[in-house]
Length: 200
Image 1 (spheres, rainbow, N blue to C red):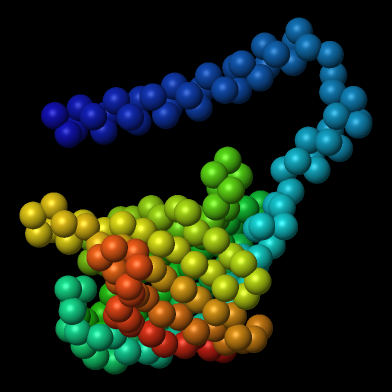
Image 2 (cartoon, rainbow, N blue to C red):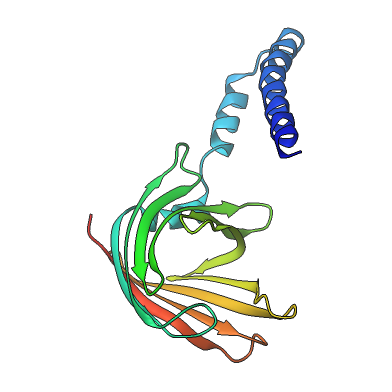
């Protein structure tokens, strides 16, 4: 069953790849050539907007240190990390690769930072060597503060908990972070905090 689904997805992707150039050729045969002003407008629209410029802050190599409190997300202990971020082709996303060490061991990860024009919110997609695959939206960058708030399933009788992650850009080479949890979105409990320093 799973193999059939994979084959179907690949076939659709291949069909789409073959169809798009053919459609473009057919359109070019019947449509008038684009005027220089049209090309300039299209090029202008494809440039990253000011919201994406804010993500350029993260481009570079960073080292982190912090501490996590004991609780439902794991045991207490020290955290350390190394992260390298670069702009993806076109400048619409920032791709970060890194690894962190903490009470639960070593974790390698890849995160993609972006901005959703329709939702008017920052997004982050991440995968890790622990098998995690997560898409988070609804993020904001206001002044020097980047914030995400999300609902998480605790896995206990359908109970959910809110997680708030906040970064404060202290300087071009230093930002602090903290993660907090809440049952009702009113009272928040600190579960981790630390600082990230740019080293290259």
